[in-house]
Structures are given as structure tokens and as C-alpha cells.
Image 1: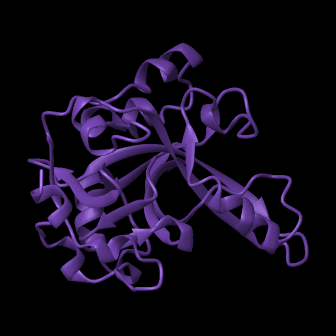
Image 2: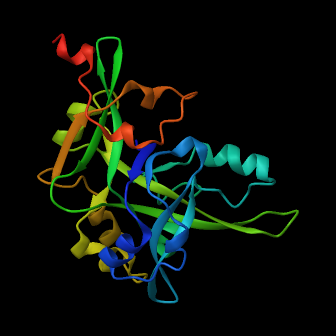
Length: 240
């Protein structure tokens, strides 16, 4: 799973890294901890009219059968992720074929179970500036106002060895690709078999991790602060 991310950079740096226009880049401020359950708006790279562009899109996929904003928000919190193994066969419909995207993040948060404790970690790239998470997006029209809301879900799969050691309960991870594969992933003509081939756990050679503060897992505390990225030695791990 992937419910917590970090995008600790400015909009112009995201645009430069992906060589794509980001019309709202001046509106974007670094996010130290993006909690998916709060349905935040994050930068997303997609193809619009065959041109790459970065848009601010709401995290939490809203299905087309949502009848109100209330039900849309409820559904979205259960669709922060989309299982790659089921994305062709469930309510996501044709979006895996037509609406694929990239979610650039500078890190992801995950907790390791140590005895009865949950120890939070920040997983980040060793060399590259971003993890290129792959996802799908969808446009939903709110019935009463006709407002169109675009939302996305992060695709997940079986964890690689590095992530399985940290996410040792479910052993899953967000799927990500190398920057050299992005144009291929966004190609709307990609076949089903080619899409499936790309939805595999990434190589873990560019992945590193360290422990962070346990306030990350406390819903009532605002952890979108620079300090959440600082390394912390948690007692539960150090007892081992």
C-alpha cells in the first residue's frame, strides 16, 4: 500500500525534472507529509492532447457512480491505491488504458511491525530526485454543481525485497518506473500486455530508508512539517 508520501520540492523543480509545463507551479508548496486520507492535491504528470503536462490533482480515485460529494469523498478514501493485479477487471474501467499518469514524490512513508509496535520509515531515492510512481486518473462530474473533479490512485503490487522488509505485514509497495520509461508508460496506444509488463516491482538499488518520528502515525497531530523528515532512532527497533 501507499497512503503517505512526501514531495519536498518546489513546482519549478518538478517541471524541470520532467521537462513538462506545470501551469500551477507557483501555487505549489513543498509537502513534507501528504496523508492520503486527507485527500490532498499533488502534482501529477500526464498526457493531455498528446502533450505532457503536470497538473495538481486530488489523491483518491472518485468512481463514476458517485452520487454526491459526500459519497465521492467516502469512495476516494478507499481508492488511494489501485491493485495492479485487479485494475483491468474492476470499477476502474478503461482508465488503465486511457488515463495513465506519473506521481512524482521525493519519498514514501511506511511502517514496519516490530513486535506490537509500528515503526515509521521514510523510503527515498539514493540518487535520483524523485520516485516516479505510476497511477491512473479519472474525471468525475459532481451532479449538483457540474463541477469536474480530477482524481488519481497509485498503482500497487507485490513488494521487492527491500520494501518487503519494511512493509512486513502486507508486503506490498507502490509501483514505480525509471524516468527513461515515462514516455512509454504515458503512451495511450500501449497494449494490455505491455501495460502488464510495466507493473512489476522496481529494482531496489536506488532505494534507501531511515526511521522517522512516530507522530507520523498519530492522526490528530499535524505532521506536515519539515521535522517529519528527520531521522529518529525508535526504541522498538533498537531493542532488537
